[in-house]
Every structure is written in C-alpha cells, then in structure tokens.
Amino acid sequence: MNILGISAFYHDSAACLVRDGQILAAAQEERFTRKKHDAAFPKQAVEYCLREAGLTAKDLDLVAFYEKPFLKFDRLLHSYLAYAPAGLRSFLMAIPLWIRERIWMKDLIRSELDYAGKIIFPEHHESHAASAFFPSPYQEAAFLTVDGVGEWTTTSFGAGRGNQIAFDSELQFPHSLGLLYSAFTYFTGFRVNSGEYKLMGLAPYGQPNYVDLILRELIDLKEDGSFRLNMAYFDYGVGLTMTNSKFEKLFGGPPRKPESRLTQRDMDLARSVQDVTEEIMFRMARHARRETGLGNLCLAGGVALNCVANGRILREGLFDNVWIQPAAGDAGGALGAALLGWHQYLGNARQADARKSGDF
Ligand SMILES: [Fe+2]
Image (tube, rainbow, N blue to C red; front, side, top):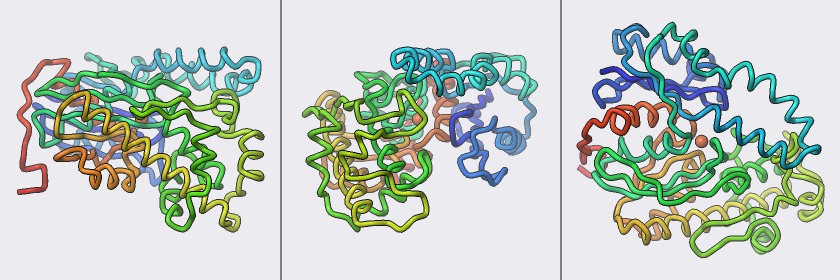
C-alpha cells in the first residue's frame, strides 16, 4: 500500500512516500526550486517521490495532507474578528489567498496530482507528533510538539504506544513559544520562519539581561511549562508585524533594521529569549515525563529545531532517551501525515526499530 504525505502552503512544503509503513522517499520542495522555504504545492518533490517508488499518482492508495484547512481558516477568522477592526487590514489581505488555495484543498490536491482517491487531513500537531514518534526507535514514548502555530494548537504533549498516539494536553494560539521566538527574531532584524537559527547562534554573544523583564512583562510561565503571552506587546494577532510600539518601549528602541550592524542589545535579547525558551522547554519536558511516566521522549515542531534547547533537555537527564525528528519543522509534517495514515487511520501494526537509536 502506497501513501503520499504532503505539507504545503505555509512554509517548507514537502512530500513523502510511505509503502507498507516504510519511508521510501521524502524531499522538501526548496531542494528542487532553489527557493528557500518554498511554500508552493510540492510538485517536484511529489514527482521525485513517485519516481523513486516507480509509481504514478494513479497507483497511490491514500494521500495525507499535514493539516486541516478548515480548522486553520476557523482560527484565522476568529482571531481576526476578535481583534477587529485592527485586524481587518491583514484579514482582507489574507482572505483571497485562503479562498483560492486552502478552502478547496481537496480539489486542489486532486487536480495538482491528477488523483481521484481518498485524502485524509490530520491535525497539524498530530502530523508533528506522528513524525516524532512513529519513526523513533521506541515502542513507547512521550512526545512533545512545539511550533509557531498549526490550526489552533501551538504546543502539545502526549504518549505514543505501538501504532497509536494519544494527546494529553495542548496550548492554543496566540500563546505560542514559536511565535515568541519569532517575535524576537523579527525584532533583532532577522527573517521570521527562517532566521530563528541566527538568533540561536547569536545568543552566546549576549548576556541574559532581559530574562526577568521577559518573564515579568511578556509571559506568565507556570511550573508545568504552560504559559500565557501578554498580547498587549505583540502584533501578530492583528497586524502585519510581530511586535508593536509597546514592545519597542519595553526594550529601549525600534527593531534592528535587517542587515544593519548588530548591537549588544541584539545579542542580549537573543541570549535572553534563548534562556527563556530553554527554561520553558525544560519545564514542558519535565511535565511530560511526570504525566506519562515514560522514559523515552520524542520531539518535533519548529521549536524542536532549537538544538541548544534540545541539548539542555538531554543534559538535564529527565528522560533515559531522547529522539528528535530531523525534519522537525513543517516539512516533516508530510512524513508524519503519511505514517499517521498507515498506522492510525488504517490501523496497521508498528514494530519500533531499535537499530535507529544510533546506539548499536
Ligand atoms: Fe508546525
């Protein structure tokens, strides 16, 4: 049985082909188009996966798209309406694209692929969790998914057992660790959804001078790692930028202009938000360990690309083993969706392959 997983239309479009539970091919569209983070329908990545498997789209048994377009639209509509009229401008800019590309996703996928068969739409964080747990070397594991936002969910944890993943709890938009990190990425003059790794790399050059301010003003962080952001400082719910003038006032001036000289403030901000991120990830992982009682941890979601925070979780020794999906961002959603189709939707058994642990 051949299942094609697809992620597309936000950033990092990708395709993945799974045959009888085995990953045969997976690729990100940017590798073919040479457009970094290409968000277009992954036409060439799909062609590559089919070619590797010696198939055409007509041979596919199932297509799995990595999120639910209607639920995502619901989130956009609700957040724009909640903030109206401030959000009206960005809403009006976004809606034609949504109507054209996302509401009619099923038709779009059918016509792009020339495929008439079954299509499933797992939730965004189900795809992340599946991408973390199913390829892992564990028969049982806790999972933690952390990103900017999917439909509504921004963070989740739960347990994977055999061929099933089950969610314990989640945080929802606008309260998002990924978006907090992206807000500082924007504010320090880097590109959102792209330059986060630069912020992480800048952190060791700075001092954690703003940690207390961030924890006092921007975020209400609980012992279990759950949190609420103070939306008085952020603009992503309503406007076209990540932060607002109140945020500028708090950190002593406007955002750094892209490509201009980096200052000590930028470095200190990078270090501070990195420290806060590590603390939140640590608390979330500790909570997942306590709640699930499981000794293995799997991570995915764009924040799981923050290898420094992952290193902290590993060093703290909360879990016996930690496994991170290499394509932790949305590209990996294609892989998660396809494996979710095979194991959870079709109910096929799963035997974890301990050889993948890297310990052998
Ligand atoms: Fe994501």
